[in-house]
Amino acid sequence: MTIAPPLDTSALSRNNVKISGNPAGRPIIFAHGFGCSQEMWRLVAPAFESDYKVVLFDHVGAGGSDLTAYDRSKYDSLHGYADDVLEILEALDLSDAVYVGHSVSAMVGVLASTHDPSRFGSLVLVGPSPRYVDDVDYTGGFSQDDIDALLDALDANYLGWSSDLAPLIMGNSGQPELGEELTASFCTIDPAIARHFARVTFSSDNRDDLKDVVTPTLILQCNDDIIAPRVVGEFVHSQIPGSSFVMLAATGHCPNLSSPDEVVKEIQDYLR
Image (cartoon, rainbow, N blue to C red; front, side, top):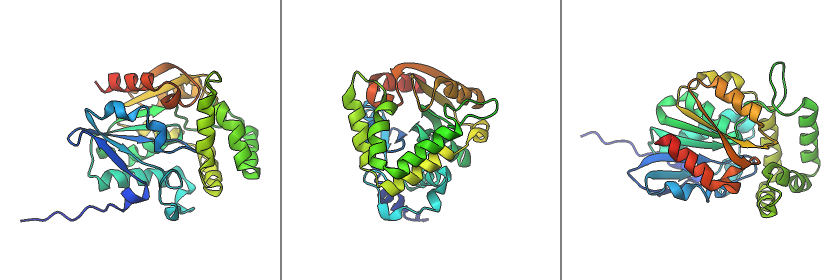
């Protein structure tokens, strides 16, 4: 009799992995954006628990992750975060997984799925951007001067930067409590890690990776998103073969908080 080797669960503790829902269901893994944690999915993930095995985690440096695992050289590109996702899937021995990635985690999912597509059955990219800086024949939403000024302000006063920028990222000025929640989330991250992650995020260029995606993909785009404007979502859609594109009624960059029911509906409709 062949005895299977024990699974390596170190990635599960490193990334504070939480599992709920249907143990026999198809796995669905939710990945949060910059300055956030798995708590940002608390209004979305429970809707999938009856039919799916729900997997939540924190990127290293966020939430309840193991801060001692933060390796600046590893996380000097989004590939380090993509490797973590693959290690989580391997530790849980998951395949045909639905990966739902918000903001920068959309590109993390793109990288992970192109490295090992056998682990993935569907991608859901919420507010994705493969490059934030404008380029020749490409609109990312920011000039290089914009990004330099943003990062300089972050380096000079991270808490002040968070208080100023988080409400703008959230949008939905009629619901100021959402901006306050995002600000509070930003302020829980170690400033040194946050500064590094921001620099990696806003300096990344993953446009060439999109054409290599072979996993069925849904793109969810918000209105009035200052981080990932509509033209960026449409670019992602045009570059990922066979992808689907949905323009949400939601506004701002965090529909998982501002319009969770709409996010749930569109994901469920796509997966059906």
